[in-house]
Length: 115
Image (cartoon, rainbow, N blue to C red; front, side):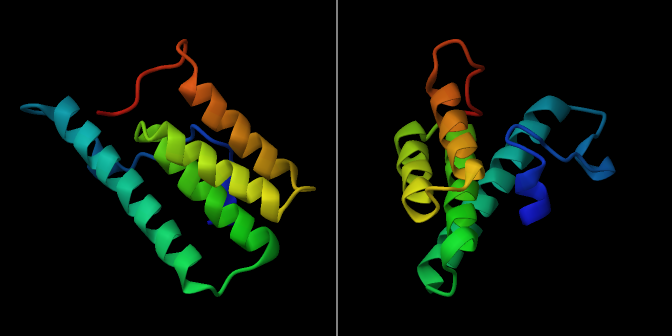
């Protein structure tokens, strides 16, 4: 998880099976992407609720959930999680980058979320 979050927000890994030719390939890809974002969000939520993380690891889990929420268009939840990450790790620049991404996604000049 850490290597993915360290690559920076906005990075999407696409496997060979994600790119298909044929009928409604674009719609199928968008739906698979939404599902992956939701799965990431759900896993981060489970991890946070487990109570097994603390410090930087917990802050990273909140950042991961924040990024997924932002990409799914849940901007208020994204900002809440980013702010929580900063509370947990006030000296961690990754937490501030995470909040910056939440603000960027909430900006009217950024691309629309995957609805």
